Image 1 (tube, rainbow, N blue to C red):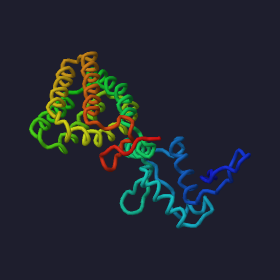
Image 2 (tube, rainbow, N blue to C red):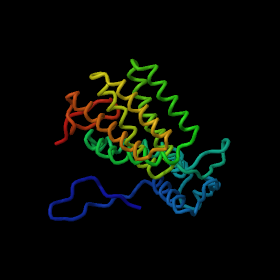
Image 3 (spheres, rainbow, N blue to C red):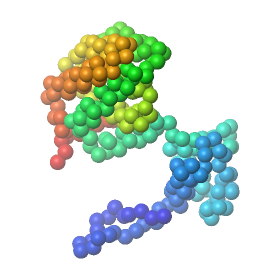
Image 4 (cartoon, rainbow, N blue to C red):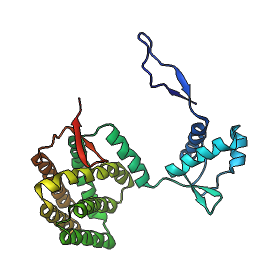
Length: 261
């Protein structure tokens, strides 16, 4: 198994030199591929390190390192101290990885907002049709908690992200949940930019209450319209801060970095 070198391709040539991937990465790739294809099923026990070393034709330490990467990625987990069982990564683990990739690609607030304008109203529409009584209670508790802690910006931002996550979960569509989750994680730094400057916490609470009421009424179109208004307000708040809409949003520091070239 090989990878493309990051060195620049010589002038007049189409391809750079090939580099052999580390053996442990090849072990990871081979097992990951078998899991994704279904050849290794969730709950099935992975062969021992010794047996895997024999099958791959590598030493045991190489297999151990490959398994460490598999565990970190959520593809295997240990039962007790020894048995390795096949698992599937939780969507949050996938989302965190995707969010880091978005930041590395210097995603801007404008891009975040444009994606949100498509996804958030859609999740609200489906949530109104499928939300359970328990999920409605969770949303009610979320809105009340935000109202009680209206002056605690850190808490309001966290509850705002949670509200949108709860609505997404209520929509009952795992593809939509996985698609929007990395975007949701980027809402936190955006909120930390907006709220300290323009203090719009009450507007957020009011919007969430309006959306919650429509979800209780099973009014999908109404919930979608209100979510669209809410996201438009989110953009207006960002614009009022004076931060460049096309500057890269920094997940780690909660700020916008310099604009892209």
